[in-house]
Structures are given as structure tokens and as C-alpha cells.
Image (cartoon, rainbow, N blue to C red; front, side, top):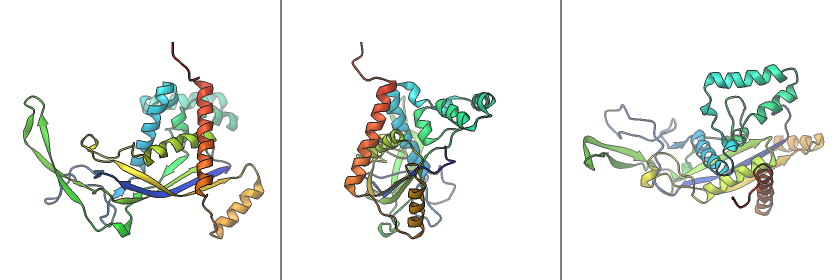
Length: 280
């Protein structure tokens, strides 16, 4: 799947907190400070793990595909480790002498979301890097919130269960950077739908979401796209431009047109495997 370089999509932008955000690291062991601090980098600035954002994005897309056909978004974790090994070994024992066929059979045994985002036996094509805070906008302005555990029987505060937790305030910007390599058009369409959900504040992050925390908004800044189209000369030119630092982002119109093409490819694929129509 990655033995030949075919295409690369790179997206940069800003992910801004609409409401306060709490991505925690568990209970603090410090004698002073917040009971539940947020995740920070080595310099004490807030950080959103790329894995957290990728997981939230993946979960939303899985819910969409399961609404069409549950088989399109099976949870790899539902298989035990031994079952995963047994599945992969069974395919290897049958097709191990033909690498191309082996790869194809592994892909066929993998649900759609896992083909793009990865599974225990298949590397993901979508990479989302850790999101550091925009330094120019950060002045150490953490906030402390109070929390209390509720006794479900009395519907009052449970005795001795008062705690505080730390949050990153609203309107804090983080740097967004995603890279996708060797993706099919329909996989890019799936990603485009997920990114639109982030752009429209539909995917919350972190803890405390039931109390309104974690609403974020993505603003895409630059989109870079390269497709070799099987032409070695195109790839050679692309590599020369990379070395020379001559990358050029797509115009907003070009990016919008590509996004539409990719979404249409996804819809066509979905319609082919799960025709959409009135249910009897």
C-alpha cells in the first residue's frame, strides 16, 4: 500500500476552542495546584494530542458509515489479539506467496474507516500531528473550574467529593497539521466530511463535554495536493520543487473543487455497496 508513492494531501490551519477545553492527564500528585490538570508540553503550554483529534474524527465518521451499513465501520478492538493474529495468519497462509494479492486480501478484510485511519494489521493513511498552541496567542491563562460528584440517590453533592479541574479558555488557537498519503478518492471524501464536521463545530474534544466543554472550530489555512498520476516525470518535478522550497498551495477554488470530487467519489462507492432508497 505504501511501497510506491502515489499522492499526498497536506492541510494546515488553526483549531480554535469555542468553549473551554479539558484534555487531562489524570489526577495530579502535586501537593498544590489543580486536582485534574490539562496536558501540557515540555514548556508548560497546552497541547492537543493528534491521536485525540484523530480518534474523535474517526469516531464521528464511523457513526455515519454505521448508519448506512454497520459492516463499513467495524471496531477492530472487538477482535481479541489472538483473533487478530488468526485472521492475518489465515490470509498470509493462503496468499503469502503473492505480495500484491496478500495486500489486497488484507484490505478487503478491513472495514472502510480502518482502511483510511488504520487497524492493528494495516497502517493508516491519515496522520494528524500533535497540535501545539499558537505561541503568540498564549500567555499562560489557564482557568480553574470547580466540580463535585453527585450522589444519584439523594441527588445532592456527595460528601467529600469536591474537586477542581484545569481548562484551557475559549478562543485559544492551536496549530493544525494533517498529512494523507496514497489515499483513494473516496477515502479523501471521507476525510473531507470529517473536516467539515470540525469546521462546523460538530466534533467536541476532551472531557466535560456533557457540561459544554470541548467545542472546537477548524479553520483551514493552506491545502497542498500532489498526484503523480503514474507519471515518473511529475514525481521528479515534485521532488525538485520540494527540495527548492517551491511548494504552492491550492487556491480556495481549486481546493473546493477537489473536495467536491472526492465527496462525490465516496457517495458513488457508498451507493454501489449500499444503495440508498426508501426502506420497505
